[in-house]
Image (tube, rainbow, N blue to C red):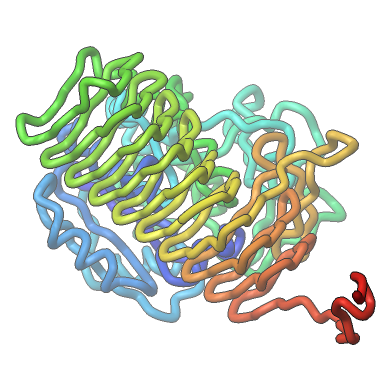
Length: 457
């Protein structure tokens, strides 16, 4: 069986992390989403993979070329296409589909066990369903498994508690129904306002009227990475999954561990890495190659640390956190969350949230994480207000951003790509891309000295 990974779309709801990358190239537990998909497909024996993209294709090509874990996928570029349906139709024109295929959204992380159950469905057409939390139902095409094959956008009714995260579709679907998909989604309640877009689910509902479409419930956690906080949700789960699989210490022969280091769990440490004096591992953890963790650093349980990382001088990496390749965490810095590659937390800062690549955090920077009323933080995404039940209070800083000294960023704030939060700023609202915010202050200079404050003999 062949698989098609659909890595198209701007991913605007994931701002500020999709300005410079495809959603499928977002790293979760230091592994891009597309690699999680390839791992699951490979475990199911699916090695022939096509990836459909509309932009950032060079990143996918470069990453796939360097990866030796899987065969090079077939990458197809469709610039300017508006939605998934049009991309699939364009692909079908170039490469006619003649057998049953898997369709995997490029922003979904699915466990191999669930993908295998979808493949094993006796029907040529089937979908894999993920359970939704209450707050997720307002902006999804929701599936009701108790009323036959029913999908509804933004349902007010109870029972629409699932969304589709993967498809198995027969060849006839792409010829007999997909070309006739309309750009208005018909299955909405009165008062709802569908966008001008073709949805794969719309074609699927019409197809189900002609053929039997099976549905399979995901039994393992799976993730649709639509919003910044979804990155943290998936990261927490996958870090724990990976770290708890380390059943005993796995230490490279070329790694070195100080006799004064304390290991309170099983650790995996890569080649040429150093764990120095006074370092404490509070539980299972994974450390990459060529890392230096020294001088009393504290590494929490289920932490994942990339390659070429420096962690030093009494800093703390909290449990479940991920440190990207080439990053530096220095004197008394604290991290709880995720930092992507080449990000620097040099000293005396408290960081909670997600930081993009090449972020430079100034000394004394603090991220607020708790409102005085203990309430969840309301986020505005594409003009719509959303209140996530987890990770709403954390800070999200895009790629190539920086802060000055003594910056304070309040709970739930997002900082756009290539923006700067200047010294002594207290930022309590989102900062757009390519902006700098600085403090304006009034100062005065007056005479002073022994004649004003002192004594004369």
